[in-house]
Image 1 (cartoon, helix red, strand yellow):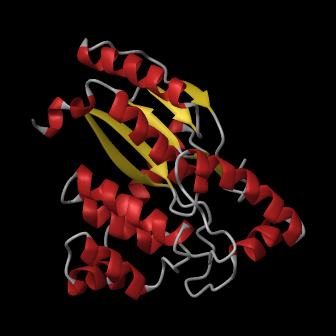
Image 2 (cartoon, rainbow, N blue to C red):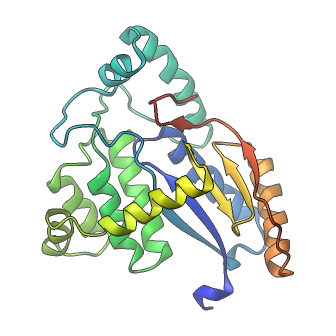
Length: 243
């Protein structure tokens, strides 16, 4: 089946967004129930929540969020408990206690490298990057960490190092950002089904399945609509606010 014979779900996301990881697992669960899943292809798009994080940051996630939000660390811990519960619901166990804040630009370069080999490999790259950040508490801007993930994806060490050190895929990342602006995307995750229906944030699996079924029927029957219909749920915004 060719690339053109599949309906696209485009996902704007950041590796540092917990709801993006949760949303990924929700969508994958829904696709296992969807009878036409072989006709669906996901494509991950870059949306960097905080490009100002220093490349050598070793700040704890709690400390970072306390600074960004202007609240005490104990309050941050209470907020993350809610996110942990949402993660547990889809079989994920986050380790916020040890998470290190990282600039995610280079992680996105690795995702774009994987994309050159197809949608399935990019999806695997996203899973490994999310896991490194939220479950294994790794610094996903660290070159050794990115090389380790890259080799798991089938790339050799030199190829991964070359992508990071030569700042490859910068234009692709910027294009994703420009497209997000054009679409009015200001929170992630943002799922765009067949460029017509959208889910902004995390939704119930029932709502995702319902949206997927409608989008698929529109795609199959070549039905086009003028405006994108957006359903909203829990998300992360550019000000570091996740709710």
